[in-house]
Length: 429
Image 1 (cartoon, helix red, strand yellow):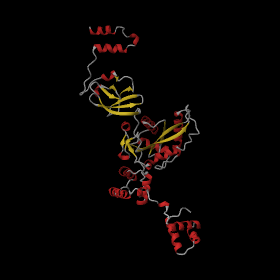
Image 2 (cartoon, rainbow, N blue to C red):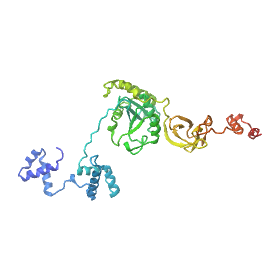
Image 3 (cartoon, helix red, strand yellow):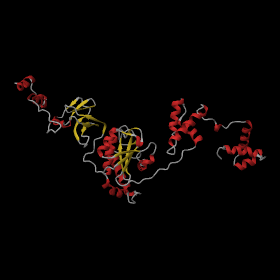
Image 4 (cartoon, rainbow, N blue to C red):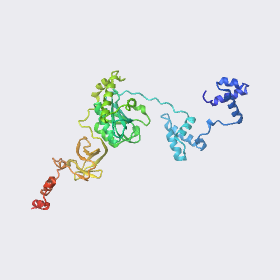
């Protein structure tokens, strides 16, 4: 049998005091006679039970401090939730220079205050078009035919909570640009955007904090505003709050990718799309009783239609004022925007290869420039053209000298006047 408990040891001592033989005691408890002799000898010698040695908290004399902290927290929280062992560990480290592990504190708390009460979670079936759930899965040793051999890939899984229709998008990274890119591709495969997207507390989605109190990543907030969905982060360490996508990520991990060879990422994506479509036709949606594929077709009309042009993935965003020379400053450069936005604010996005400037109210891209260009001032002459408004008048037209400079600058180098000064002097006469 397993190790004898303290109760078994006390029973051995009591039976011995009542004249029970060691062999009879062993038969009653279902142990060997040697075990009985061993514990009787330890009892006579006054040996301490090594399994019940004082904890590190008791050795350091911190038991009273822990009791006071725990009682104070219990009074504050009431029946809402038990005190946090992690916060207790932080308190001991900060206030008492405790060097023990979190597990040692948890073991002490459970021995003194018992296990925390169970809190069951509520199961909710969402209506059509209400929610998607998203998560990443990591896959190693995937053979894409790369010269360096098998590589690590990441599968982004987005699931429509009502119909259970899933979209799986492969990516080589999980940075901000990849985060926006896989969202675009997932929404394309689902055929629309649900009202809410539930995510984990990863940094590309939640900048700091977690759950309902987390601060949404500014780039992701701008992306969500463009597509028109609300970001809903799960509580920390609560995977059951997005169980539908957790299940599908686990399902993807069952794919036998290591025994297959793909001709690049596009080939893997095409194979995955076909596999997911076939599974959707076979799987039954528990909310409708129909197949996932049929339930998805019924849910499509409830999804927000995709815009004609999905936002280009970006990893930096800022709201910037438009100065009097019609320019905005971004990443150490000045970009000219349409003059009618002078005195207002625009949204500037740093995409993978371009800088996009958008109207923050409509989300329309006003003008685009190459990103990280060697030039520090980038001008699109079209930004100075067009009629004015009641608030902003058009800039003054170019004079003859400025027009001549533009003409010369537009000419190929071999056709430009040899004597630049003479060409400009003709204008100045």
